[in-house]
Image 1 (tube, rainbow, N blue to C red):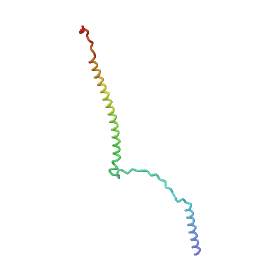
Image 2 (image 1 turned 90 degrees about the vertical axis):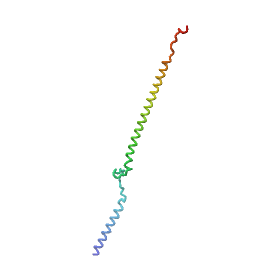
Image 3 (image 1 turned 180 degrees about the vertical axis):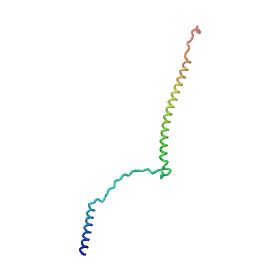
Image 4 (image 1 turned 90 degrees about the horizontal axis):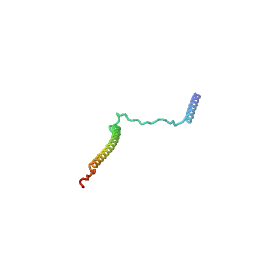
Length: 111
């Protein structure tokens, strides 16, 4: 029986030594490679403020577009008014010039 115990002890020692040697040669750091991506929360789990932010941003963008278009329309309207006013003034000047042209004086009154 002593011999079996000694053989079992030797076998256990060999297995422990093999485990130590294998562990020494194995890399202890296994780098995990993963990609972190941002995920939007489902709308059901968002609060009221979180749900309204995208909608308000869309409304804000639409209002900026409208504001730009109105500014361009106002510029065109002002140019048209200025052109109309210039035409009206030039027409009045022409009318005044036509009515104030010196008439040919007759020489009969001088005799």
